[in-house]
Length: 93
Image 1 (cartoon, one colour):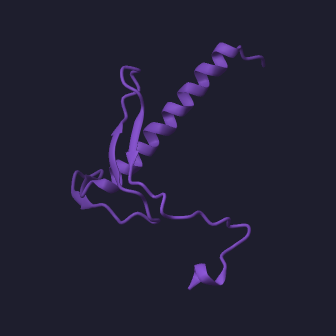
Image 2: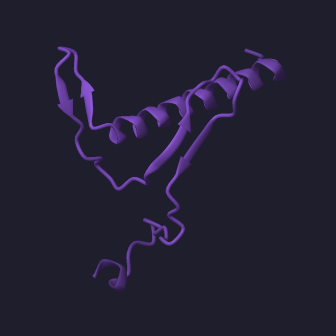
Image 3: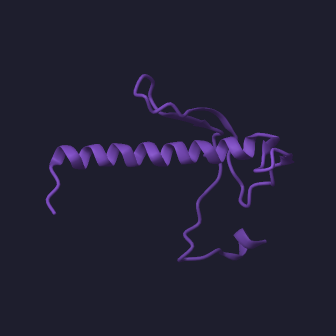
């Protein structure tokens, strides 16, 4: 099956938009204090299963009028540990 470069680019853009909307939904879910379940009963959101940066703003509108944006808390003070190498004693303690 041959896909034209134009179709490939369109599919790539749609995929990026789909991932962006999904990420916005996650930040919105954990930023809200309540949600509606299927029975329309207000329930509290659980705490996120992992630490997450604070989300200050996102634009989920994929209508192309505004750029897709997510503004998150600055986490540059932290480091990323390569899980293949593992943690050293100082990182564990």
